[in-house]
Image (cartoon, rainbow, N blue to C red; front, side, top):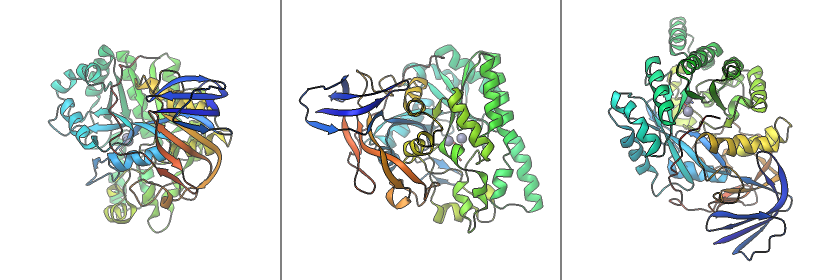
Length: 463
Ligand code: URP
Ligand code: ZN
Ligand code: ZN
């Protein structure tokens, strides 16, 4: 199967040029002007962009959590991803108590096999850090192809600081990367108790119970552990200006600290928790939404290079029947998480590039190129000869009003309902196969569940 995409604006993380891209057997074979190869399919991309597919490095598919489980599985989640221009994702494989890393990965790969529509990988989520599990980190990096490990400083499955230090040491020895959900659990616990005593359990108190300083302090502490060990750390879903300042201070000292943020922390604020009819529950996630000062600081952080990747933290729960059932009288019981995988690229283009907040090249970097580098996806992340043909032909002028009826995620709402976007995927290819395309008023899925493959990733190299 061969494919020739002609006359599009080929965008890399550093430049943009009009040209053609030729694909054979799932790989980019040639890039140039006026390529004349005969191909099974030729696409006229004049007026459109030729982008590397986005890589979402932070998803929770079918994850048991807070008495329920996230509602996109590996099939629905990856179909939605494809329709949004995401051609790879890295999901969290959270250990069950007593499981080895290998057992955990195999269990979750069993849920994915025959279902995934795009390529995927996994980050082991360490919740039972026995000595055997810590010793298995080396194999996870070099044998299993999963060199990044998630630890949580919050929730009841959090690890303590001693474990974090051990994980940092072990990953440094073998070429791994620790990822951290950084919030101070004791600050949150204290405020939860205060609000409970005072009977203040409405949704807005979700935000008040997790103040900016809870993230700031946890990031500060985690950075000190990096200073101690000389290891590397990746902060997931950075949400605050104060947390960003800690990351910048650490980076100024030469520490290998990296950060990811998500569209919700760039675009939405904690006012949403005050919406009537319990609608605020739709935005209950951790960390919570913040204020416009943090939104703006995070855009600046992307441009300064301190925030290197964009992710979604895709963790959908139905509003009707799940979010509203669990937490009607108590914000602490509302399952934390929101959908986002299908809107990642269109939002970043429309709200980021079109509104002049980031360049097109920066968008490609944070959605694809830097992500591939951070997580060792050597064949992904850029329009380069020899890489997998994970390509989005993107129509920068296509208008689209975000509406859950026109999206594919297995959930009944999107936090971005009503957003008027400019720019949508026109055709999406996974290793040269058309997996989604624009169909008049929305993107339709054209791929097949089971097409996606598990990607073995390379060890982490600090940069
Ligand atoms: O609220 C969130 N983010 N839910 C998913 C779990 C996590 O903390 O990433
Ligand atoms: Zn988290
Ligand atoms: Zn998450």
